[in-house]
Length: 208
Image 1: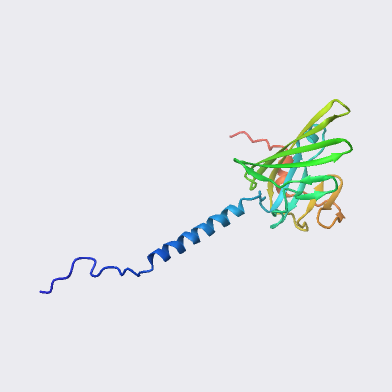
Image 2: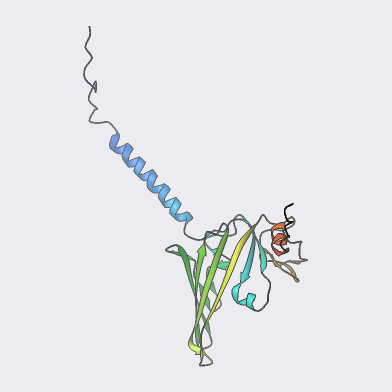
């Protein structure tokens, strides 16, 4: 009977390309990690119809707006309806990761006053998100007003309504303004989710 040699049958040659293979795999993993990190460089909202309400405006009785968000509405240069860069006397920074939230700052100069805005965005951006903004004035406006605070809350309602296009903002009772082309149109019918939210709760019939 022929006896088989112990495993391995032959030694791995010294010139086997294992180090090169490991290096290639490591570089591939690093590339994937960098790509995944790049996807997290700014917040992205789920495409569809969002209801956006200002906490301060709500106390004044102003209704929420409905915004149709497109597939590529949020980019590195423009996200959460904020365009990064310099416009006039203002410099707008991008949202950057700050723990589980996102932080953005902007600085404007109005006459002798420097207006600094700090916005903190939180949420999953798939079902809901919130942006809290603190605006400070240096020196204080009128010598007394040092800061203002505001917040907005947004909730996903579903797909955009038929006839809507990305960039449409519906102001109830006024109409639709498209932020991309500046066109103004009549107000569309509210989506089923919004109608159901405003409808009174049905009374249950007592069991017989």
